Image 1 (cartoon, rainbow, N blue to C red):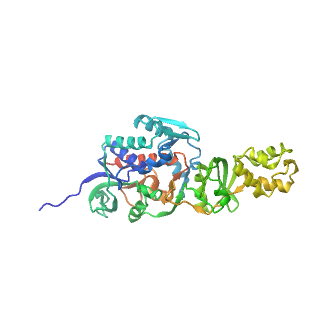
Image 2 (image 1 turned 90 degrees about the vertical axis):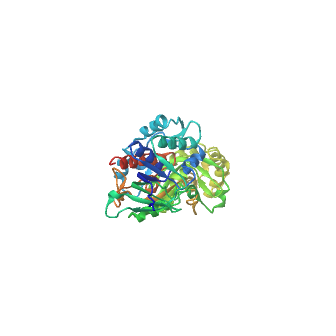
Image 3 (image 1 turned 180 degrees about the horizontal axis):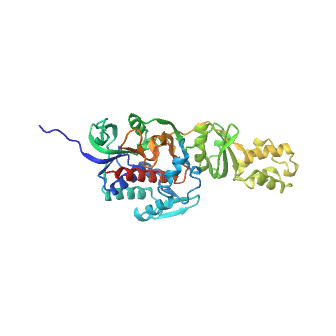
Length: 416
């Protein structure tokens, strides 16, 4: 009677999203025998829905410092080191020339595939990974990872699937994503695998997520979009600010400004203060004073959408038919508060089901920052959204997935 011997690989990558595909690609380029495992029927489910199906694949320009675009509860110095391993311009060149995906620039610092199809980005990553020699196995959901010999890291790992299948690998790269958009397969199961292998979890929360409100007057503005400047304030101290587009929805607020600000609300219990049309207090003062003979309602409506202008004037307590020149200092301040320091009433958020990414995750302090190899379990590497790092809206999370996937894949293959 012959004994069954499970298939064996040098590197097993778990999760065929952006980070996992990049990790498999670079590990295979390094000469390793690689298998990429995914529990879904196809690779890159989140890639396909990103950017409304168009895939905002990268930002045009990086922001300086790194923490202006990327967030972690871990060491900022480690984060800076990681982003030096593969510069944004080099990633852009890789996508254009090696993946052969032409890119076009759009407003707000965004790069999209010229075709306008997210599928082209996903397919290019799959094609290149396979060309480099990686085997991709679908419908193989990993439910357990164990050391082959707890006392000997050179013996590698045993991976088991939901259906009871097994395979062996000398090294494992976890690229299972976080908890955002669980319908695509990133339902947090990777955290459970990492915890069993000795890792602690930084509490997770929805990030880059629309916010909700019970203020019916504001939800009645659904569909209105305009530029704003926003500030996140915690216990009277400003902790972040930005300028981007704001969108009123039937449930609350969305748009790049709200998505970027959302994690401060959820993680830090911050209040969000809005300056409509991104105009400063002094700009509003100059504007209103230069129109002393005009009514407040007409003057504000000349710069803001009519429905929003009417609501802000009403909430300021100022009579709309009053002339700007007749405003007292007190009424002027009430009006300015609504126009350039509007405190956004927030009741909650839309949750992981629609969040772009996950905040929290496996902490950077549990990894070697030069390789992304686990300090807890030698031979285990982690990359992408499973880690306690995420970026602002606008292609920054693809940047993180690509560079962390490359680093993990290359470093896992080198010792082999």
